[in-house]
Length: 436
Image 1: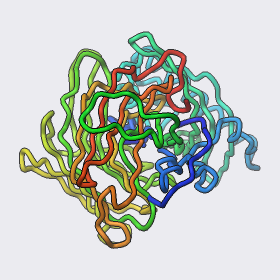
Image 2: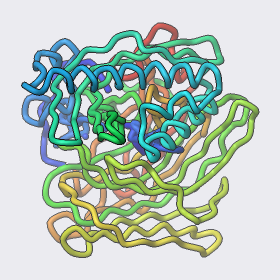
Image 3: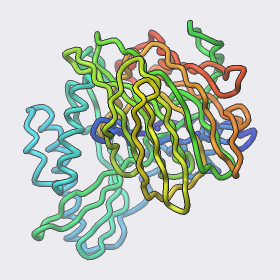
Image 4: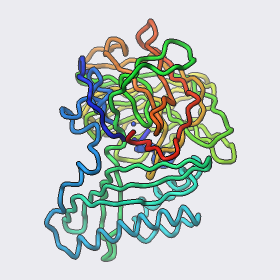
C-alpha cells in the first residue's frame, strides 16, 4: 500500500540478490498508499535498499530534485505546453483550496471524472489521517510530450503538510501526469509518483525497542515501509499471514499490512493486504484491499476486524494472469480474484506501511506489535522462506531519523518476524518524511 522517498546516503553493496495509496499508494484509502507509496532497495542483499543499488538500479533511491530537474521540456507545440502547465498549476491550487474549504467541487474543472473521484478520496483520507492543511511550496518542470489528444508531463513538486498535532513537514516528489483533451480542454486523468517507495541504506546500530524478539539491524530505512523484502530470481508467488492489529483510537493515522511482488527495481507492484484507518474523531475502520500500481488501491468485499487472522497469497498463473487470495482464517471467509498485470517478478515484500495520500504520508497509527508468520515466496520455481531468500529488514523512520516501526530478526523458522511501533512520533516538526 501505495504510496509509496528519500535523500541518499552511500548505498550498501548487496550481498546477494534477494528493496511502498495506497502511493501508491493508498488511492482511496491507500492512495494513502498510495504512495502512496514506491521504494528503492539496493543495499538489500539484493535490495531492500534499492537505494543501495542506486547506481545499479534505476535510482531506487530517487535522485534529489536538483539532480532530476535537468531534463528539458521536449519539443512540442508551445501553445499546448503552456496549456498543460496551466491546467496542472490550477489543479494543484484547486486541490489545496478544496482541502482548506472542504469543497471538492473546486477540483472538478481540471480533472476527468475518474481522477476527480480519486482526488476527492485523497483529500478525505488526508483529513481523516490528521492532516490540517496542504500547500504547494514549489514546482519544477520536467519533460512534456503531446501526442494528439493525450499528453504526458513530469513535474517535481514540493508540498508542505501541517498536522492537527501541530507538527509540519514537506517532501518533494516526482509526479508523472497523464492528460487528455475533453471538449477542447486539457484535463488530468492520472498522477503517478513513481519515486514514493524509495528505501535507503540504514546507518548505526538498531534502535532500543522493547518488543518480542531481537530488533533487526538497521540495514535499510524507509519513510513508510517496515518489514522484509527479498530480491533475486523470478518471483511468481508470495504469501504471508498476520493478526490484524488493534490500533489505538487516541490519535488519527493509518497503517497497512501487505505482501507484494515487484516495485523495487521498477514502477510495478502488485500487492494485497489489510488496513486500519483512525479518523480524527477516534473512529477506527478496518478493511481488506488490493492494488496494482500505477492503479489505485481497491477495497474488496471481505470483512476484517481487529484480532482476525489473515492470510494473503499472490500467484502468477500464466503470463500476465495473477490470482489474488485473501483469507480471513478467523471467520473462514475469503476473497479471490484473477487479474491481468504485467509484473517484473523481481522482488517479494512483507510490509507494514504508513500509507501515503497524494500530497503526503498519513501519520502512522499506534498499532502496537504486528506479527508476520508463514512468510514465503516461490522464486525460480522453488518455494522458500524469508531466511532462504536472504530477505533483508527495513526500518521505518520519521523526519528526524528516529525509528517509528522496527522489525525484529527472523524467527527460528525463517518465516516469521514482528514489527513494533515505537514511541517516536510519526511526524517531526520541520522534518522531511520522504527524504531524511
